[in-house]
Amino acid sequence: MLSRKMKIAALCALVIIVMAFAMPAGAQSRREIKIPDVPGYRVLKFDLHMHTVFSDGKVWPTIRVQEAWREGLDGISITDHIEYVPFKKDIPVNYNRPYEIALPEAEKLGILLIRGAEITREMPPGHINALFLEDVDKLNTEKWDDAVKAAFDQKAFIFWNHPGWKGQQPDGKSRWYDEHTIMLEKGWMHGIEMVNEFEYYADAHQWSLEKIRTMVGNSDVHDPIAMAYDPVKGEHRPLTLILAKEKTLESVKEALFAGRTVVYWKNDLMGKAEHLSPIFNQSVAIEKTTVEIKPKGRAYFQIRNISEIEYELELAGSVADFDAPKTLTIPAERTVVFYLRSLKEDAKGQVKPDLPYVVKNLKTAPDAGLPVTFPVTVNFIAAE
Figure 1 (spheres, one colour):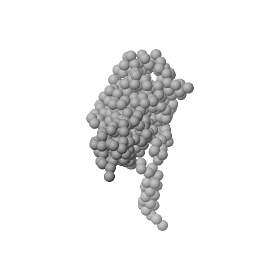
Figure 2 (cartoon, rainbow, N blue to C red; figure 1 turned 180 degrees about the vertical axis):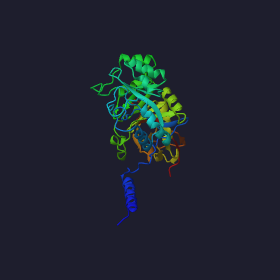
Figure 3 (cartoon, rainbow, N blue to C red; figure 1 turned 30 degrees about the horizontal axis):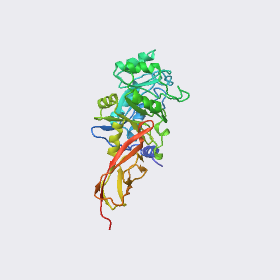
Figure 4 (tube, helix red, strand yellow; figure 1 turned 90 degrees about the vertical axis):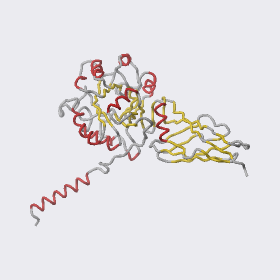
């Protein structure tokens, strides 16, 4: 017969074994999002819109931090609803509490945590996120404009959420209302969410080019993140890439107000050309730009992609005296070979053709890709 102490020891050992097997595989491992930094800036990966049980989410605030760390994010903002708290019979209403609970975990894991909230009103003006708040309680007002002004008075970064959300626009069409003009004229709208969860709003993308400085794209996640996106299938949440001078909250805030952002959704990057170009240039490079060929011969180039984006290119026009691929795919974290064929029988000397392409999944506007040029040098040698 086992003694009481031996039984207790055996039980403890069993509990430890069960807990070890119950712990999700990779729970303590972090994947890195492979999008390189650019000259002068860190490319920080943020999700600026999510929920916890303190509004209508399904997880505790610390879980949001842990999810972000495992997925390779640099920072998040928990933006629980102010006006919609369906679990208030179970959890006391305390608008600042999600941030307070999550902050120690964020500091432990090196995740930048922004105090935020979602002003949740009927359309117009709809739902509005406010970031870098000092006190969320002050946004709990009767009138929507008083709530937004309370955020503005705290020097918050304010953006309009999911303008085409079918919960408020049944036809899925984004509409600009007088209330949004008022917000813009008063300086109360600094950004617009052109991607939310699985939806992309082309009108919002265009407004971000014409009216509003900063583009953002976020998950608006309510369930555990793993229930929405399957990394085994290559899925990831929408992200706002922030080009910040340093990995600090002060630098992130400065970059958001300056409009230095790119939206990363599925396999697309969307933003201004001045921000997309350096990301592409830091991701993609031709291994050897100078080659020797005979007239009417072919030159082969190797092009390397160190990012996790699969770039999809299309030839823009033609290359004088050469034949080049009409389309070119550069897979994520791979090197590919492409050719350039001379069309002249009497070609000689040195030629430096610029190869003009458009990167279709780097979108500078709803229907416009990013123009890029590959400069190469071809030295012709005499045919035997």
